[in-house]
Image 1 (tube, rainbow, N blue to C red):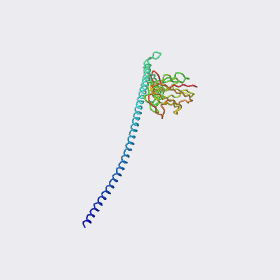
Image 2 (cartoon, rainbow, N blue to C red; image 1 turned 60 degrees about the horizontal axis):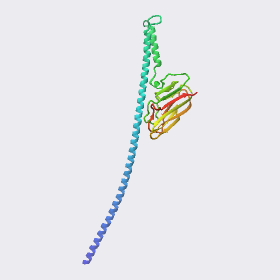
Image 3 (tube, rainbow, N blue to C red; image 1 turned 90 degrees about the horizontal axis):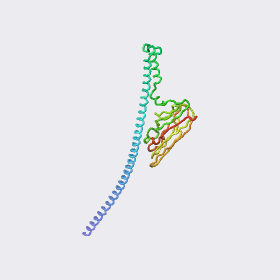
Image 4 (tube, one colour; image 1 turned 30 degrees about the vertical axis):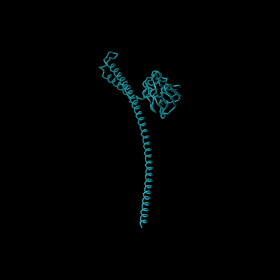
Length: 288
């Protein structure tokens, strides 16, 4: 009987131990699976974090580019407004002098010695002439932008030459180059405010432009009637100062426009130089 009891206790003990071992094995497998799942979760989160970092970097670059473009646009608008102010002041001064001339003429006596102040009809006629002239010459702001500033030097000659008064700082794509110093403008076709040449007569024209750069690279285009007609390209390395030119010959009609701009899609880098040592310029003339 005693031996039977010992046998039963031993069997129960072995069974209990085996049961605990099986339970431990089940727990280890569960923990391992959970660790694997956790590792996969961490990897997934790391990938998402990397994607977010790339997105932030791209957004930072975009914001920086937009800021630079905005600063360039503000500078361009400021320059245009300053030029418009100069034109408006010149316009007001010109017709103020004209009015003074009329007043002085009104104060003088007629050739036969009569005093013009005593002739009311003559004064009314003078005032009417002055008003009519001012009305004839009164132009809108938009028209002043389109009118070239220099006088016609010859009835049959059309030719112009202009250059940038200062360096263009890192111009963006699609930026119109305004050669604001017009040294020659025979035929009154070039506008130094807008940088646009408008053909005063139809014919065959030659146009050439020079772009100077230092440690920079840009492509420029010449547009005839808002269509790209030619281009030039230059990219230079460290400590190099080089100029590139482009020349086109084209038949254009009266009233069609020609201007130069930075390439519309190819982004450049660096400045377009213009100084006493070398100018970026734009020129053209009527060939026939």
